[in-house]
Image (cartoon, rainbow, N blue to C red; front, side):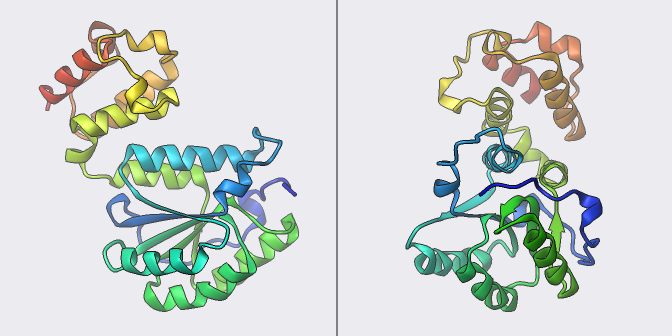
Length: 233
């Protein structure tokens, strides 16, 4: 059963000292398939999970989705991934098996982060108690908004301002599959509003592109915008 996600003030501050980096992250999604069957699709937990998946896709972050009886095989695959990407971000259903496996994962990498508003336990009280217990053991925790922001800030500029990076960032804002976007169509016809445009411009400017709001309106198709951005560095 879904319950209100705890607020930051209800949790013990994270004591972990390592810095989250997009290029070193693996996003582990546990039971996402089952959670998607929930009736309340506008619940904060499910909205956060969808946003995390979109951001991970936009930044080309490795994702591993484990559900049903696939846990042990998934954990084997996760061990292989952690040898290359040592930062483990965990979201989804916190099952008894995952709780048992977590100390073993911590022996593989100490850079484990629980996404505090994108995990589900039995109730909010257990949610808070479990995170506080892990905090005392040195685990990192962070909310989904902060994680997405840190991912964006730490992603390599050459990735964000590549044709693929530009396409995926726009697809994320539009909540569309990248292949659904006609490269010659005005992006505003897909529902790209001023808030999304400002967010995209901020991301691209932070990574070295010389673009302002007016430039977007002059180059409003994917094809034109991509050409402009690739020539603006």
